[in-house]
Picture 1 (cartoon, each protein chain N blue to C red):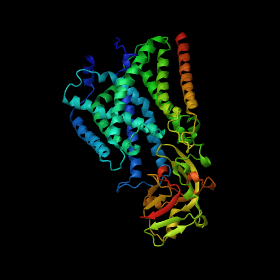
Picture 2: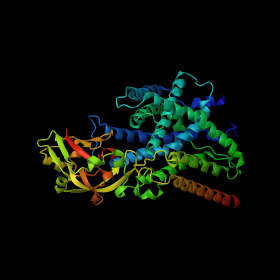
Picture 3: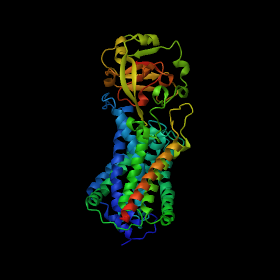
Picture 4: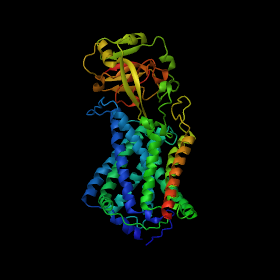
Length: 376
Length: 149
């Protein structure tokens, strides 16, 4: 029996089973995004009980890569899901009882939040800020709480039916379809997710980099073979960074504060480490760094134990000119004040004269053009 | 209408729903508090709410009806046998183009940071679309061959 709806794609696609399958997919992608997003938030604004470990060195690279790629995979799933359930928007009466009314009201934060998170996340990695009259990180973070809260209500209301629908055998579809079958529709939607992920993932999964034609970064394009997030020109830092009287200051709770020239730093024992730049925007690139272990520097200043640090850039006009290092990371031998990148002296765009680089840290906390290390 | 009866059967409002409602709306309240409280600063609650609700309205009032109209107009024009594959390829093409649009337009380019958005995204989009339609043609060819046997 054909139900005629007059809608272009055959009406059988506006179907509970299709909605349930897409809902399951979205539950997975949004769940991954929420968990990895909270991790990234906690790393950057650590509550007292949270210590992000320095090992494995690629940990943040993986969690944030999952965050951004799951978000991108959600685009087709979310749009398809909304299209499939669209006729329900116009059901009359709008609710059967109080519980149903509350459930439907909760769809406003769910759908608004889902669209908001995916839209702002995508345009943020694409550097298109003008549609956002607010600072992206807190807006995206708080909107995620709203969306996931609404998602919990929705999943609880729909969970039983979803399980029943997905576990029961699929009804046979007519042999001579007028258009896309349900399976064909779902296949196209998931293929859309796959195509997007393949076209982007190569800016963090190196073996896929040749496929990454729609990625906001290219692993090959950047000074010294490494992408640059904020160039020296953008940061307007050249006069201070290139000043021959540059001194790295080590101060705070230290027995003997230090003021070291670049020559002093080069004269100290150097340590090499292979560490990725792992951007909060989802791209990442491995590189080879050489410089002074922060442990040694603190030892020279007479510091014993593993204090927390605040690292301050020569750059002034940037919210991210300061980063903090927890005591576990301070103890790691690979936490460096790097002087060299990939066998060459650090380029100004990568933080000359000295940059912080440490394992499993977000790129935004790998402070460039370091002027001061403050022991807390 | 039949649909409202259909819609009802898929929702469960037993006690777990009310527990989830309390928990879920607590999270929603926490999120709203975070936006309005502005401890971290610069959330611009009104600008944020406008985009939050605006995207909802734009989808329901503009995007969804346009997609439906496009389906009504395009569907019958296509040869019957090609229709499912073309519809599938249109879906994949549309989402890729939607994602790529700001990149192609270069909205985010920064003159002082050439390694941000370093690629020719018009070319990239064309490559992906070509791959999608190549796959679609292969699927159609296989189906036609199978139908002849």
